[in-house]
Length: 180
Image 1 (cartoon, helix red, strand yellow):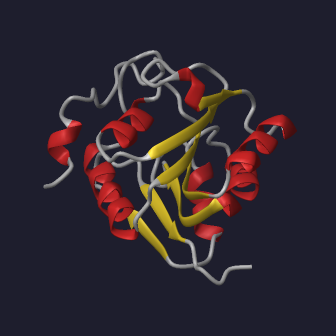
Image 2 (cartoon, one colour):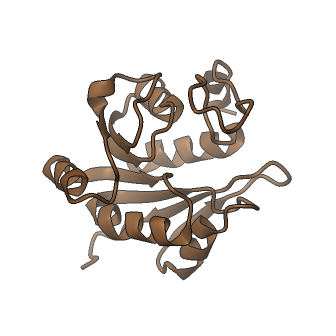
C-alpha cells in the first residue's frame, strides 16, 4: 500500500507509550497511510497540529507528503524545527491568537489532551481554522474516551479510519465549503 513504505523508518508503537522524547509516531501506520491518501485526495498543503508531542507525525507530513506545517504543544518537539511549534497551552488566548494569525489551514489535526472537555475546546478553538479537513486522533482509543465522545456528537460528512485490534482510530471531518 502506498505510504506504508515511507512509514517504515518511523518507530511504532513507541515503547514506552508515555515517553514522548522518542523519535516515533503515535499513530497506527495503517490508519496514517489511509489518512495520507485523503490528505492528497483533497489537496491539503497546509496544516495545524494541536498536540505535537515529539513531532513524529509532523516530521512525516512535512518530509514525506511535503505539507507546510505549524503546531502547538506544551513541550518542545525533538523531530521537527522548534520554530514551527508554538510552545504553550493550546487553550490560552495568546496561543489561539498566534494560530488565528497564521490561519486558515487546509487541515487542522487535533491530538492534544484527550479528556472530553479538552478535545471539545480544541474543536471549538481550532476547528473553524480548517478549510478542507478536521482530523481527530484516538477516536477508537479504549482508555481515552474523550475524542470518541466528541466525535460522535459532531455532525457532517465524516470518515472513520479504524484498524481492528490495534486501533487508536482517526476521524476525518470533511469541511463543507458553505459552512457558516
